[in-house]
Length: 374
Ligand code: SF4
Ligand SMILES: [Zn+2]
Ligand SMILES: [Zn+2]
Image 1 (tube, protein in one colour):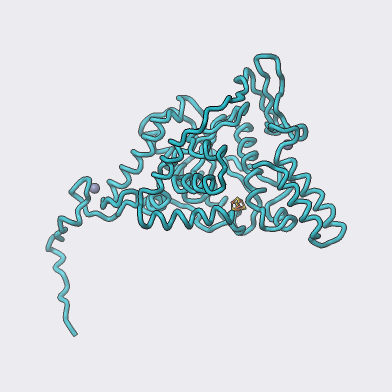
Image 2: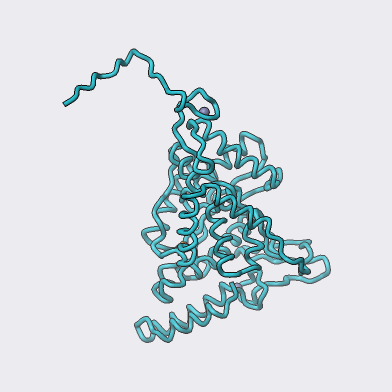
């Protein structure tokens, strides 16, 4: 057995030059940046990460002074880091924005209830107002009930349609016209890949936009983490000791997205820059110009107490493009959420009559889903 003498605590530790941070050359390198494999210290990592987000915000003119913005907060790592960093940058660079946390309670026991507890702690930690909008209040359904009724296969389709509307309604209730989400570079590259693999040209064109706004909608969405790697967000949350919730949703994520994610991970292992490369490819794809049917800008926007929005246009066209049932903006007579709800209600009635999960009811729901053009 060999004997290793204890090191002398009075002797200063000598850091090998190769271990020094490649940016400041003063502190020990602790992190290998997933984005470019640069070896840097913790403080330099915080600085470059925050500066890159700030540059994305400034170069894309994401905010206006005096603007009220809602951070879509789920309690997960992305939205927790987003809320933290936005508050920090707002103070550091004086953006002059008011930040509010906006959470959606989909009604998933064992997942969302725990993650909402994290958001409530974040609200106190970051001293930001919080608004929670629930599927139960808006649609009289929870995701648990939807899955029990319609099966797990389409859970994310239902959830996605309902969440988009819920976020808009929550924002409208708060008088907010800008919702920020924690979608990161990995999410965006996955979406680009999925659209390429599906040949969905129309979506491919929109999938790399940092700001999106549906025609006629008063609410815009933006993604300040568009160029931020998921691994770096996790590292930032870890080294900053942020309080976030890391459990995955009980219901499996979209199978096809899972496949695209796997493909991305394999590509990233051999070429770390491929996430950004895929985003840049998506940004630079130029499709044949087509005539855009743009609605004229709304002259007056009224937000009702239930969160629905009324738009009066300059040409006298009042309340255009609204769902006949719920008043939400929709390009069809009935919005996607109401179509899904109709299918669910029929199935609920049938289930309560037969007291079983009928195959026929599930087939009807599948037909309702197929009718929708996502
Ligand atoms: S994984 Fe699917 S069901 Fe779960 S929260 Fe996300 S979209 Fe909703
Ligand atoms: Zn350094
Ligand atoms: Zn509707």
